[in-house]
Image 1 (cartoon, rainbow, N blue to C red):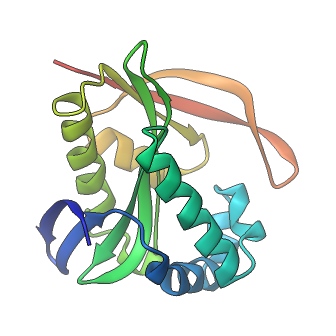
Image 2 (cartoon, one colour; image 1 turned 120 degrees about the vertical axis):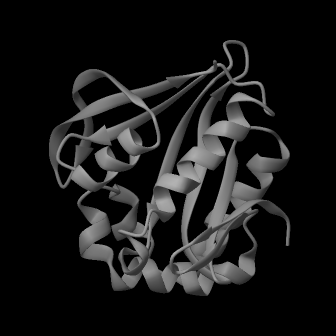
Length: 180
């Protein structure tokens, strides 16, 4: 297991690790258990319909990690796979990437995702050489908005009809963070 970073929280040790297929059953279980909550914000939640689909996703992420097209990490809470965080849409020429994330609702409210975003942001802007990171959030997703703001991201714009979710066009807030 390759640990990208780790930190302590009030409920235990959190590690951001490279994805492994052995995490697929636990991640699939989290997705299925909370599919109605996740589907509000993550359209892929309803199409993740088997452990095999999750294994395929993990294998694809591992390949893209190796090719520097993505940085996908699994969030372990005391060793239990509980969500993911990533850098995607990497634009090497302009040193820009987007951050995406989700976390088991059981572990929400303990600062885990805020700290995970802070840790990934710090490494991306210093060690990995990115200049700008963005987070796009459905304007109705109050928890994700709070994560971005608590992680030090700045509201930059509202993008009209940017995504389709639950069969309708939705606006997103664009949050950014620049290297110092």
